[in-house]
Image (cartoon, rainbow, N blue to C red; front, side, top):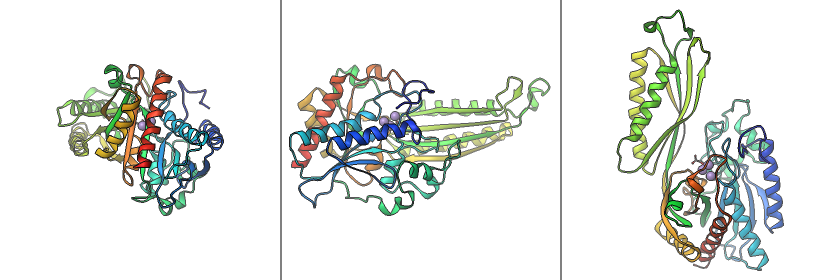
Amino acid sequence: MVDPSKPGWTRRPFTPWYQEGRSWLEQQMEQSGLQVSTDAGGNLIGKIEGSKAHLKPIMIGSHTDTVIGGGRFDGIIGVIAGIEIARRLQETGTTLNHSLEIVDFTAEEPSEFGISTIGSRAMVGNLSPEMLKRTDPTGLVLEDGIRMIGGNPDKIEELARRKGDVSLYLELHIEQGPVLEQNKKQLGVVTGIVGIHRYRVTVEGKPNHAGTTPMDMRFDALTGASELVLELERLCKESYSDPVVGTVGKFINEPNGANVIPGLVTFELEVRSIDSKIIEMIMKKFADFSNRVATERSLCITLDNLSKSDAIRVLPDIQEIVADACGIVGESQYLPSGAGHDANQLATIAPVGMIFVPSRDGRSHCPEEWTDFEDVTRGVEALARAIMNFDHS
Ligand code: GLV
Ligand code: MN
Ligand code: MN
Ligand code: MN
């Protein structure tokens, strides 16, 4: 169920490995007494009916796609945790007041379409027609990808869930950072999640002979792009009222020949913060800087926004429900999330909460990603308790 041609544990959305994983998951859901369906956004959903039909469902979700060269925990444990809780309810003959839905959201990680959290965006009606028409480098149109995994892109808008359609959304996830491990805590109560703005930057110069073109007669796209990459780092290292991180993680130089002056560079950047206004301010400064570089170097530089997700703050009463549950199971602390999650999208229609478990050496988005079994089980236990508490409140 992982792509053998890629490093680590790679399960990119809309690939055969993703589909295989989903089939396995579907079986697990069925064996755990869940009624399985796929919604318009291609999200795989397992449901147990509650005893009080007028109550809107509680939802547990996460994702099973990975970054290229990813690990075995990011996303996956959140879905498996939901299934485990359903299994336990089944085994103990417990019926909740609320229905319970366990969701494997489609394509949470940044995709080749320049969008992340595709399935949760679709679920809350935040996947635009423009996004659905985007193509990946293989020529696949996003809406066809969604159809391929059993979704119905034509009905996304119509079937989207609205504010109040979900009573509570909870997600268990690995921390993906070093804080819990360093503080010797077993569980994290998430207080908020960063917003992420992503842009594609295109720097167009003029390819030419690297030996015969004098230094003052070049229009080198790569040296221009290098200035931009360093400026983003500089801007994000300035001091702000809340932490900010900025990254250029994807970078393509063309034609990429040793004796050719680079003619075209395309790269993708992202900026994250819990305060979206800081991100906007940095991007404004970055755009001004890009204009200056374009003028000084006679390059054509364009910035295209690929996606924006808003930062969210977890409501105090949900933090309390989660903290109470975590407190019974182990040592916990409050912390914000620097990673984006499907919870960012669900927060537009429902109260959301998240529980973190420690990541060894703070590693994630790499094959070394690891969380001890005992830590995962504590997280599942805390998640189950939070749901039971909410269900009875
Ligand atoms: C997703 O894992 C992200 O935070 O980029
Ligand atoms: Mn991830
Ligand atoms: Mn994740
Ligand atoms: Mn994520």
